[in-house]
Length: 198
Ligand SMILES: [Zn+2]
Image (cartoon, rainbow, N blue to C red):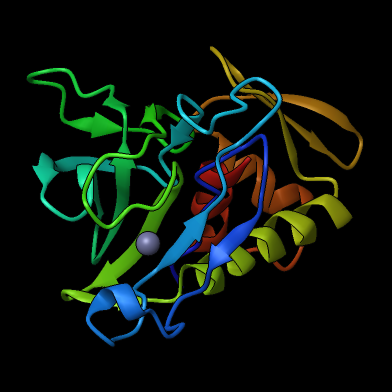
């Protein structure tokens, strides 16, 4: 199961749902979700930071006639798509992206855009799937970990985890061994996903 975090941190308000009837799609249905980007800091909805939803690589950054400045990230089988951006943070030659990296800023570029917002899609084999499903799966895993106190408390340098018995210093090579001994009911795949989400 592909699990993701949210592409916006400061606000969460869906204005158009996946598969919703959308006249501006030539009588078709909306692919992905539209998200409000107006925040206290960015009252006009332009300039709100947009974050990578999972670890991956930069696949495409381009200007699309309909979607404006568009970023496409690849995460194995899946792609995440971010449209109508005012600006992207793509740096020439930089290919890797970590979950939570700021990949650009919201805007109102492209012709199918009635006011600033983020158009967000998850695709697999070129087909757009409901992003909410993957966000829910991510939240479920985080809540599951919270209930068992497997929480990453430090993100920079050494990784520290709150496990039963206290805070443990971990690094990428020993963390799975320690976590698996200190917890129950978690598999290696789930754990790797958790690293992306916390
Ligand atoms: Zn849209």
